[in-house]
Amino acid sequence: MQTNRRSFLMTAGASALAAAASSLDAQTEKPIRLAIVGTGARGWAHLAILKTLPQFQVVALADPTPPNLARGASLAPAAKTYSDYRKLLSERNDIDAVVVITPSFLHAEVTIAALERGLPVLCEKPMTTAVEDANRMMEACRKSGKLLYIGFQKRLVPTTAKMHELAAAGEIGAIQFVSGNLFRGDWNPNSWKYTDPKTGVATNWRYLTFTEGSALLEDGIHELDTLNWIINSPVARVTAAGGNNVFKQRETADHAAVMVEYESGVKLSFDFSLFAPNAGPQSRRMVLIGSEGVMEPEPEKGRVAIRSRGGAVRYVDVADDTPKEATANAVGSAQDPETYQQYLKFAQSLRTGVPAVSPEMGKTTIKLVLLAEKSLRTHRIMNWSDLPA
Ligand SMILES: NC(=O)c1ccc[n+]([C@@H]2O[C@H](COP(=O)([O-])OP(=O)(O)OC[C@H]3O[C@@H](n4cnc5c(N)ncnc54)[C@H](O)[C@@H]3O)[C@@H](O)[C@H]2O)c1
Image (tube, rainbow, N blue to C red; front, side):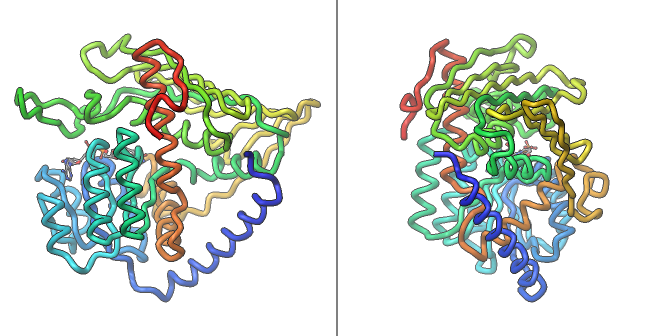
């Protein structure tokens, strides 16, 4: 069922109150002590942001790759470093929460260990690489009674959050068709290398199905998660075509065209290319088509455009309240305003016990992507029941 306008406005009102309360709390509460597991490229971006957030204190870091651990530690000099996260979890009694930023195939293992240790977790997207793992993570979450928050920070891009709000409030009538794309360059060549225990061969973890799960789990998943969140209906079927037209020597795909059919009748069409490093303003695009008009975010202009069926165009300006010290230039990463906002949400979620992005949402998104991956490999239409519940 789609969220109706009244229930949406009530939720929005409640979150405004919670945000006000949390900013008061932030002034009075002790810092939240974090352990970061995984200090590669994304871990470094988290640590850079955490430096600007006095609500948090990074007290421990774990990573088996010495240069990455040292680079992470340069941003959190007071943190103790560990080459093995299991030692960290068994040794420390002064941690309030764990942030999991390892390659995706390790998310389940580390998250479950932290939850079993009685610690809440912020787990990077994708939640994990298999539905069965997601179920085990949710079971550990239930058993421990601790928070599990899935890091889809791109929902918090101000124009994206505003688009969600306007769509739920019925600004373009009932959403009927949704289109999106991600055209980008290849994965970071300096990503961690997975060493196959049988052959001893070390491979960029983003090139292997076992470690990455699927190229769309690694990227494209942000848009798919956001659009799925906006469409707010159970998925009926998923179809995809794709493969390796340029990066032919690796297992994970370099392009895909995905179509999702929802039980509500809405269709989602999503295109992905990993060989389009200079795709210009159309590189990350989302368009919602409703019964009364068309809506799209224009993040570079700080606004959402609404074009009504009658011809009128309206722009809704969106303010970004992320402080300057946490913006991209200040910390040297392109993704930081959203990550800053995500840590504010994480602090709030720790207080309320309710994750802003739940493990159920994390699981739904990986299941959608894994069905697309399966369709792409088998050339068959996938039903929602073609992967485990
Ligand atoms: N939310 C986003 O926008 C975003 C952006 C980039 C990456 N990510 C996610 O962050 C995760 C990490 O990506 P990355 O770019 O940092 O990759 P990376 O290859 O740069 O770094 C991975 C790090 O994990 C470490 N690692 C490997 N095994 C480990 C273990 N057993 N315990 C602890 N650490 C271990 C490696 O040594 C390496 O330092 C992935 O899940 C990725 O999907 C999310």
